[in-house]
Length: 533
Image (cartoon, rainbow, N blue to C red):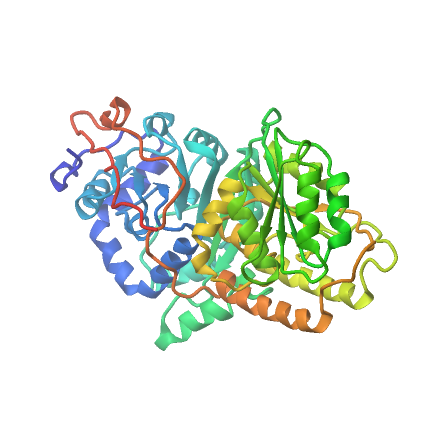
C-alpha cells in the first residue's frame, strides 16, 4: 500500500508557519509544476544531465525534497527513495514511479530520517536546501544514513541570479515561487563544515537556461564551464563527504613498481622498502626491457622470497598505463600504491601515503615534486615550467589543487579502484602515462584527492624515459580530452553498471511505519533490474 491520489487530503502536522505556507503553495500548484517543467525543458534536461554525470546509474540514492520524483527517476538508481512533505505530491510520485519508494515527511524532523534505512551511496538535496530552517542541523541528521563512501550532492540557484529570476516571475517567464533563502556558496561550505561534511567538489552550470535554437545547450556545454565565466552561471552543485577519521584502522598494501630498462634499481627498491601496513606485497610489472630487467626482477624475487611477498609480471601491451592496469588487476591487498622504478621518489616516503588512506584523511593521494627543493638535475628547467602550466590546467579540470600530475607515486583503496575500472568506459583507454586514468577516474568518482610533497631525487641509474616535446604534446591532448569529459559534458551513459554497494535493506517495521495516521506507505522495491557488466 502507498499514498494514492485519493489520499492526497492527508497532511503532516507542521509546527512552522513558514513550512505550512510552503506546503500550501506547492500543493495548490501541483498541475502548474508539470506545465512549467515542459516550458523550461531545456533547463531541466541540462540539470538532469549534469546530475547523471555526478551520480552514476545503479547507485543507492536518497532525495530529500523529491517533488514528483522526476530527478530521482532520471538518476536510474538501483534503490531510490524520495522524501517530500506534500501528501498530494507524494501520492502523484508513487503513482508515476512505482519502481521507486516515496516517503511523506518533513526532512528536518528527526523521526522522518530515523525510519529510513541506509546507508545510501548518494544523498541529493536539489533546490530545497534554501527552504530549510536549520540547514547545518538537518545535515547533521543525515549522517546516520551515510557510509564513509557516501556523497551528498546539493544543487541550488546562485544568489547572483536572484534579481533575474524575480524579474522572470514578474513577466511570466517563470513559475511564481515562494520566498526561499538565496545562500552564497561560501556560506553553504561553512554550513557543511559545521555539520561535519567536507566539500570536495564545486561546479557551476547553465549560463543560458533556454534552448534558443540550440544556442543555449552549446554555450552551456563549452562556454559556461570556463574559468571566470562559470562564476556567472545559474546553477551551483556542491559534492561533500562525511568527515570521518579512522585512527585505529589497519590496512594492507600492494606496492606496484612498473619497470622498463631499470635493471640497476630493482634490488635497491627492495633493500630500501620500509615495512608498513598490516601486510605488504610488491608487484614488479616489467615492460619488455632490453637490459635484462625481467631477469633481474626474477632473481630478486627468488633471493628475497623468505622476507618479502614479491610477484613478477610481464606486460602484454606497452606503456606505463598498461603496466598499472595489469599490476592493479593482480593486486590482493587493501591499498594500491605506485612506486616508479627510477627511485627518484624515495621508497622510504611510502608509509606517509599509506597512512593518509588508512586514516581516512583522503581517498586518493598524489605525490608532488614541486614543493621541496630538488637535487641538481632531478628535473630539467623546461620540464619544471611545463609542470607548472599543466598543474594549473589540471587543477581546474578536477576541482582540486594538483601541482604535479605526472608524479608517479599514487595511492588509493582497491575497492575504489575496482569501481574506477568498472566505469572506465566513460573515458576509454586513452592514457599512455598511467597517471590520468587514475586522476580523472578519482575526480569522476568524487573521491577526496590530496597531494603529498616528496623530496625528488636525481637518478642514480639509467636515463629518463620522458620525451619533453612528444609527451608535452600528449599532455595538451589530455587537457582537451579532460575538458570534454569533465567540464563540457555531453550525453551521459544512462545504462546501469555493477556496483560494490550493499543490496537494499529488507522491509522492516521501521519502513512500514505510517507517516500519517491511517495512511500506510509502501516500502521501496528491492531492485529495478539486475546489474549488467
